[in-house]
Length: 331
Image 1 (cartoon, one colour):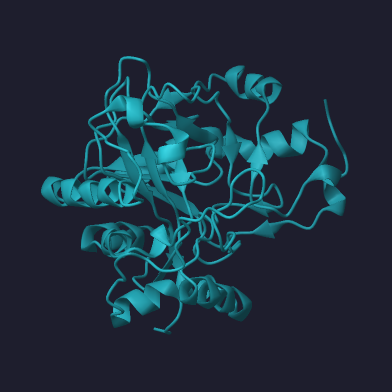
Image 2 (cartoon, one colour; image 1 turned 180 degrees about the vertical axis):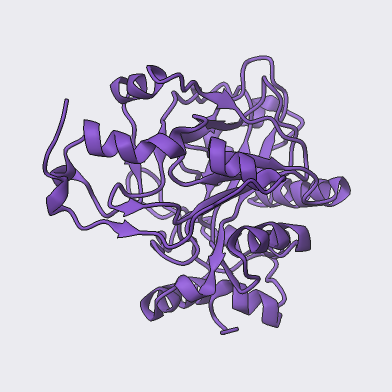
């Protein structure tokens, strides 16, 4: 299959390029499309953040009991996306979420990556996956990239602050190693550029996955321990992997992406301020593609969850560094 319409498409090219070898995790990010940075948070601190997340989950005055699997039902849980993430109820601006985002070694990783400590952070989700729920079927793989085919080069690096054990049987990130190096060739040779969207999300179908498989690329589950930071290029094909029936681990992670503040436009900063002031979630991106999520948690029929929260249970302390990372205050 070959398409010849690419000349009609305006591509936005990144000015940033990894050019190792570096002798550290950046080499894996460059060559494989992902990396695990060990011990980015102390283990005890990771346990603290996980407990705060689980306490938040049980704060909705329902019979939910994490020691009793029979209570692990949708009606006892706040509304979450079909990929196990929580984006509403002001959770993305809870104090513990901001504390985790501001961990010094987390910030150092992204400062080292981008070559600056003047960073913005995404207002991203919390993931708590209760394994083997009786009322919920395991998700099928949903491979995708979080960068439009109309962007070329590395524009965004996503992050998972890992707060629970992620072994072979547990829920974790699934990646297609080296797909970051092939995705642009795939788009150009195997897709019709007239159908490309500026939206920074592209689902990869089962048939399309065969193109990568024929080039030796096979999905793997990323293994990590509490306190590790998983980072990946948004061009890397990935999805959230479900726990197997053998897992008893409650997957708990915070998504956080950082990028240089000087990449953001005035309009983007205005959207970040709007989301920040209203305690709303955005996307995996920090400096661009800042789409504000719905203001209220709603059921599938459109009705608002009466448990909806317009404010966090615990507001963070608005330090200068926090406000800079939020994009509310300049550097």
